[in-house]
Each structure stands twice: as structure tokens, then as C-alpha cells.
Image 1 (tube, helix red, strand yellow):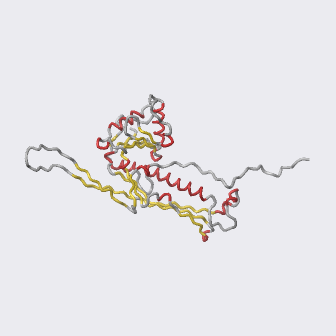
Image 2 (tube, helix red, strand yellow):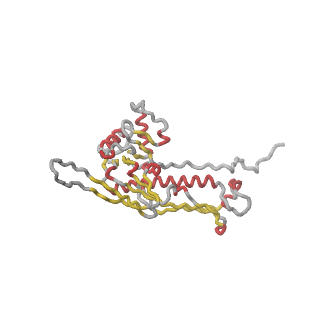
Length: 301
């Protein structure tokens, strides 16, 4: 005698209490730049510049010679929302039924903790890309800088691509044309995509910079460029763009109505919609640059 198992299907262990979530890119730009809070539509950056003209002091006369310029750049925020409806009954026929509450009325979501954490992370990731590349609701830094038309051209060598062989030459050439008035600033950053950052790290570790520690730099995405006060900063919004920008962090602005609004949401069970779980997140956001002429930009020739 023996077991007859012809009518059975293979068993797969189902752990209904665990749900793995996908990795999400992390944003760093908002944390580094200047924040403008309480912007519901638009707000101006009020700017002032002046010169200092030396004259010969050989008489008692007063000879005014100088100009002070007061100007504005307007930061406009886009009004955005993310909404999703989830029907818990869709989970009843799968292993996920074990994570549902008892009964046919679902007033709470299965895997709510994992879902909300992943959703917020996805929102932050999308914002990080839009801050540089724009979206349908606000202009990103790339479009604003290019639109101003006054940034310093940093591709003085007419390079057509960024490689491990030429990346030092490119960065050195960009640093050489940084405007003198911002050259010594402690918040001077070289923003680049993660792909370019990886190329730079590879170039450093395979050349004669044996004394330069790059351990952990790939995880953090930040590293002082050897011999300068530049902090190389990897941002996902520039990945795949073949663009780099040198600027002060304080020259870049992120405007929003409420700081960290992208982390806030409402999730309710609507009994009049078939017990649907409804997720809503609303936010306002936009970017601006105070002094575009103080920025060095790199674009492939």
C-alpha cells in the first residue's frame, strides 16, 4: 500500500504575515537646498546686488558712482495629489486572505504599514526626479537654469560624453570657471547623476588617489572632490541626463506650502464605496534659482 497523491497540487509555503516591498530610490535634494514654506501659489525671491567702484580721494567733493540693483525671481508651486482606491475583497481568494480582518466589512487595510511606507517613498522618489527634470505641475532646476540663459558654460573642452578617462578633466574645467564671488563658499556643490557619480568614484579608485578614502561614498552619494571645496552630490534627478551643475546649495530653492507635506496622507475606509480603502496625499511644490549667473553647467557638446 502507498499514498495516492495524484489529486493533489504541490504545496508552496505561504507566509501571509510578510510582504516584501521593492527598493525605492532616495531623494537628497530637498534636504540640501533652501526651503520656502507657506507658498500656496507663488512667492518672490527678492534679490539685491551692488557694485563698489573705487575713486581717487584727492578732494572734498562727493562723486557718486555705483549701482544697486533690486530684482525678483518668482517661485511658483504646482498643486498635486496622489489618490488610490483599494478593494480588500480582491485579496480574499489568495494567500492574502490570512492578513484580512474577520468578517465581510473591511474598515482597515491589510499590510497598511508596508503600503503606506512604500507609497510615501514612491512619492518622495518622484519628487526627487521632478525637482531636476520638471513634471506636469512645476519646472525643475534644469529647465529653470537653461531658461535663464546666464549660467556659465562648463564644457570648455567640448567633450561629447562623460567617461572614466575624461571625467577629471571635465570637473577640473568646470571648477576653473566657477565665478570668483562664490568660489570660496562652504556650500558649493557639484550635482550629478548617480551614473556620473559612479564613473567619478571608479576614476578615483583606479588612479593614483590611493590616499583618498571613498569607502561608503557610493552608499551616501556624496564625496569631496580631491583638492577642492566641491562636494560631489549624486541625485537621481540627473541620472541619465549627462548634465552636471556647480552651485551653492543656498542658491537653489524648494518652495512648498508645508515642509515634508509629501510624507502626509489620509487613508480611510469608505463604507459607501463597497468598503474601499481610499488613499489621498496632497502637496504643493516648485523650484527656483536665485542667481543663475553663479551656476556652472555642463552639457555634452
